[in-house]
Image (cartoon, rainbow, N blue to C red; front, side, top):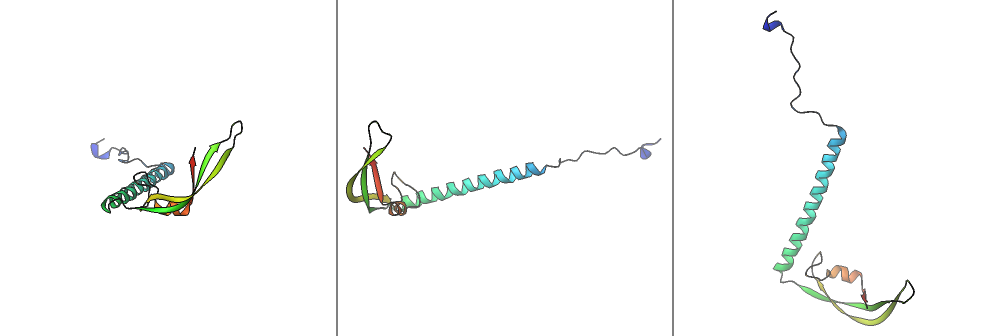
Length: 114
């Protein structure tokens, strides 16, 4: 028997085939990482624009309440304190400890713990 007449030995595939579950998990992980990266870039961009504009703030009038827990009961008492201005940031996200103005305008009731 000569070398030319020997039967060919099958060679393993250089890249193994992946299962459908592995492919789905890889795409899912890639999608989640992409969403997190885009969210981080949007937040960072909002912060940079906030700083470049000179940290713009505004004042929104809200209704203030003081909250106090009741003794012996698992309840909270609310005390009306009137209306007053609250500082807010002109941004998409909270910046420098201020809530964004769009959020404060949508939530005009402000309760402070006692």
